[in-house]
Image (tube, rainbow over the protein chains, first blue to last red):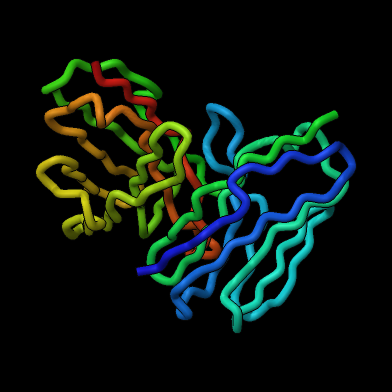
Length: 109
Length: 115
C-alpha cells in the first residue's frame, strides 16, 4: 500500500520567515495530494491540494509543488504568522488517503 | 463542503464496555471513512464504509472490535467494542467531497478516554 513520509517532524521559524515541509510517497498511482492543518483540539482542515496533472499551485501565502518523477511534494508557507502555528499533515491518495506523520510548526512572534 | 457532525464529542468509558460513535452528514455522500488519531500521532484509517455493503477494514483493524454500520448515504456509526485503555484516542469520520471525490473533509472527532 501507499507509504507517505514527511519531514521535518518539528519546525520552528521566526514570524515573517518562510516554512517548507516535504513529503515523499511510494505508490506511483497516487494522483491527489492534499495538505491539512490541525490546530490543537480541532479537526484537520484542508488548506491546499494538488492533482497529479499540475506541478505547482498557490493560494495567497501557501503554495504546493509536486514532482511526480521523484514522487515528492512540498508545502511552502511564506511570511509566516503566529496563527500558522499548528500541526500540518500531507497525504497521498489513489484509492485510500494515506497521511504523513505530521509536522509541528511553531511561528515565534 | 459538507457539514459533518459527530456524537458524542467526548466520553470517558470503563474498560470492557463498548461505545458507539455516530457520524451525520448534511448531504448524501458516497464514501465515508473512519480514522483513529492517537495522542500526538497522525491519522490512521480504520475502515471505509459504503452504503449497502460491508465495511472494508485496514490491516490491524477487525470487524469484531470495530463494527461499522452505514444504513444510508448520510449516516454511519463506529462501535469500539470491549474497550481497553489502548483504545483511548480521537476517532474521526471523514467524507468525500461532493464536487471532487478525491477530497476528504473531517468531522469534529470523538475524544475517547478508557479507564
